[in-house]
Image (cartoon, rainbow, N blue to C red; front, side, top):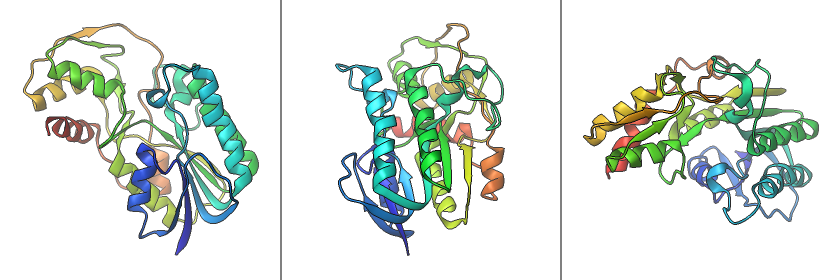
Length: 267
């Protein structure tokens, strides 16, 4: 059995991975405080700070630096791994513009969060030979933190106006927690070598307007949508590379992700 170290094991994604990877290998679950040295077959770096976990009463830039840059340096010193799976973000593409974004597009982080995650990727590249950077979208599932989807759904449920940027642009920057877990299981089974970046996102695409309407149908609500115009966002991505690398025919669709989340909201 493979020895798998998971950082951020008490977090939203990390705790889920700990629960589903028990059959894949011997799990060493670590939080942010790593005092011992470890050697393993696979390191899944799931620790970090995101916009939904930021502490509102403290400086955002300092929190991102501590959790997404300094912690990565510390993990690199404490853990030796044959393969690293780093959970990064599609936000590193924020300033690329409204297009279907692939891994060959240049990154252009606009905010402190995206910059800190990109910096973390580069630190890991200097320390490990075999790394897969999974650039994650909105990951939906039980225990999901505050994000645009939770706010949109709450507004629809409460019969409030839904205010959307990029309402008519294609969107697939979403994945279910269970699908992410499946993809990581497939990566662990593979014999990957080298350094690579993989966009993780749903198949197909919908507009945010269509997503709001679908949520409204599931909740039995009429949806009042107000468009706020356009702003830079990495909302439409290609997942061709991850499907090719893992030999997958398809990944969960945007519509299935949205319906599953909306139904869970009713429970």
